Image (cartoon, rainbow, N blue to C red; front, side, top):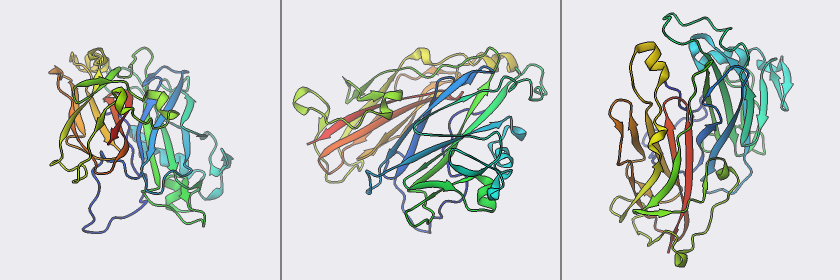
Length: 348
């Protein structure tokens, strides 16, 4: 079972025409959600779990007001599938339900939060209320899905009908027209519940630019409030020359590396108990930039069987315009853990 965050449209926000060229996913040039950090990737029944969202608005229209909403209340859906949560949303579709967080039409039991952080409580019966696994060797567990919506406009109840039954929140411009995928991101994250099995988030201890350790601008929850910093080129902050080919692989390459503590690769206790396999969790890092380009945006940090990978850096290519750019490194494990770091680079 994959436990990592899946950020995607939960319904058809926009359709792309044939022949359209898309920016690489590592280049953040629209409203994007880059990660969700959980205080407890594996939670115990009754435990409070706080979620923190890393998002960035890379749109040419930025800076602009962005609204964030969270929906909690879907536990142990049929087949452990997030799509099963649609039944909970459908119970209030069409405005027949109550109102929570200023959004009408939500059924009882659905909790709404706003802002970059959100706390929910894992139900005390999240494990006991779920039928035990068919295989008695698989530890009993529970499952919570938390949904989110990020909107560069006004959040409100989705239109009635199939869309509202799938996801009850829409994103609209000042005229009330629905906004598309560049301005509206909807997604979810999963939190598993066990009585005693835990999972810690990956540990990031630093960042290197072109082989030299640099002081990150922020890490984890700090990045929710710390604005982009202006590098001090004379003081030793990373600064580079522009490249006329604007992030193309023909530009000079600079190694970038998020330093991950090998202790982050914990033993996968569920695999040990259920399948008698002594493996560690998988770790990987996603690199993102708001300007320039990245050679390999996803790099393996730890293989479940082969162990820790000593080389998980990638290459960054300079943009053509001077100014400040941001680089994010988001480190995941395959059990829902996530941490990130951000650093700024100056372009002369």
